[in-house]
Image (tube, helix red, strand yellow):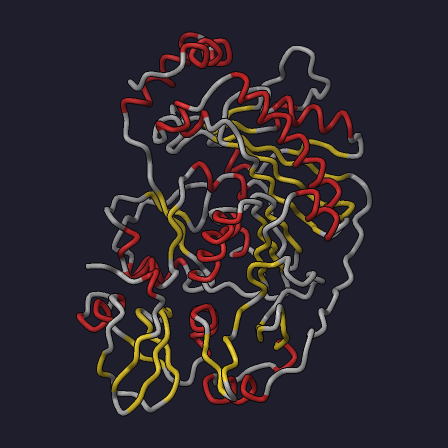
Length: 453
């Protein structure tokens, strides 16, 4: 067993009792459980199961989730094609706690690296909107990269403090995910850094920060909406105490039961001494000694006030559409909707969320089409990934083919395709783009994503 902080052990024994703590401690003798989800924006679960090379064992509370038994999955073509997202199975539970409606407007307040955001986006339809926010600039770049790889539309990534987000979007969202920064006790089995950084002082510091984030989520929530609060820690201070404090401060909210599929694989929340909310058992705890995955806490907070229907804010283009953009879309796509083309931060974008976004606030807004250069358009990788199914020129390569391996290394390949911009696909899913000239495909796969071997 790993060397855990003595004070943490004492606290966990008090929380679980001696007998159950022994079972928890035994979980450290087992390997951390890995898993992945199918990105249904690219391929259905049923179609993926026909070609699934990883594992056929499904996660019972996540319809798109599978346990993972495969090394270096990040190098696999299916990962490059955005068909899958690797995620801890316990971390999949919060987004499965309630039934999400396809036309909801959703905010993921603390979104990086993007696991819960991608899970939420897969539950939305064409009219649903997802804003994924991350306050740390470097982490927001990673989040944006994952959103790009997965080929999402009607999605924006923002880099702002929770107070700024609440200011920009007052009473806007039907649901807000608050996967709050925490002391990380639930990650101890696979994260030695979390162990080394743990202290009671840090637990209490995290709890104060979590209360502040939750308050900003309240300000951004539409009356009648839902907040899903989650952490990957076990402490009462960061979990039930935060929830109890919020409910006491906001009596118009209630703590509601989670979906039965999640309830069956989690333990009740803990009604601690002095708590005012007697329904804290409706919160859920995911323990590594009870279910396969790392530690997780989740609670669904519902605003009991009458629901206010949102009025769609059609965001007008912040500039004229350059003729080069229109010419490019006509040449590359089978069909396109001119009403879905707009300009954000000076760049042409497609399928931007129909919600007001101040200039500069978004890292990525909808699908970046590309950059206009001297009367022609240089397409962005995001455009290939999100719009590939609608391309006129599609070049299908087998997952194990030498041509696809060479493409992923950034090499030029020979193709049988007419001249012009085209997408490379595998099993029907877009991997990236090329410019075809006289049977040669010039590689436009981003250098930072290329396989070294």
